[in-house]
Image 1 (cartoon, rainbow, N blue to C red):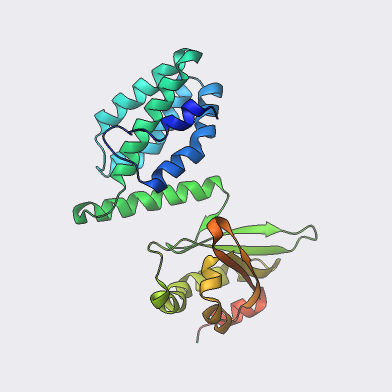
Image 2: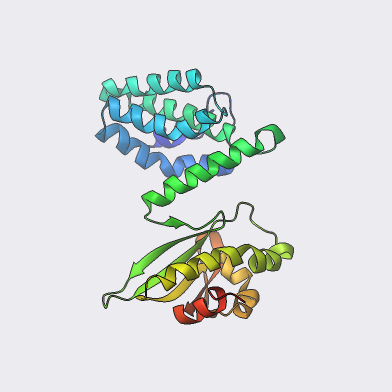
Length: 245
């Protein structure tokens, strides 16, 4: 990524000042944004951007005409290779509109933002070939060479719990999702294990152990956080969470 494009991610995004986290996300996406400019045509760029903003437009978080105007200007810059800086600037402005619309704090927007985030989550997980269980858990199925399968759990809490609330969150928040996972296992005898790996496992290791999981080694993961793995045989998982008490 060239320096001028990296710098463009730090400047204003329309009239929205990006937070440090938002700037970081935009910077991380910049190589992909440049690739889109280099490898796609006008119609493809326009369709891609419209699809990203459709959930926000559908619930009224952004004005459709405003978004269409900015997307059109951005897509038009694709006409000439030398217009890449203009394209990057347009994407940066659209990012400001996007991030600004999803910022929480306005009670009147809370329900709309929740709906949009769930749509975005489902679409993202489809691209990653992962399946949504509920608002907390999604999973992917990993197939071993011998035909056996592992369910790998991913945690996506709507609100990341503080440590004081974590035990309650794990005990109550996971139970419904685990019951659904147990039904999936019942319908597929080739699934032999349920596993997970994250900072949530590390932070809630004592509670997860009481829930029946075997804990793995502690390691440092992304951004210096402590992470840990856990696993449970599929048969035991079904016994604990798939049989009516």
